[in-house]
Image (tube, rainbow, N blue to C red; front, top):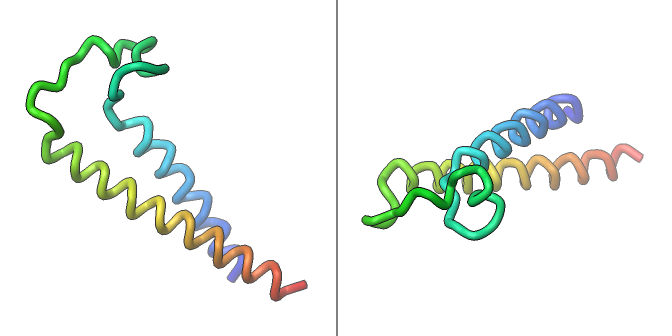
Length: 78
């Protein structure tokens, strides 16, 4: 059980890194250093960006749930 949730946590962690790196920079900060500040958003966020936001939130909630479950499993096994 612990091994399964550990593997799931690793997968969700990698997905979170990938999804966060896929987001467009909002300007000001490190995104400007890598060319993110050169683009201007004229019409707000597109459908793809909103879907990426939703997917990131769902993966983040699953990541958090894995951490909570792993903590409870580790505590009960001691």
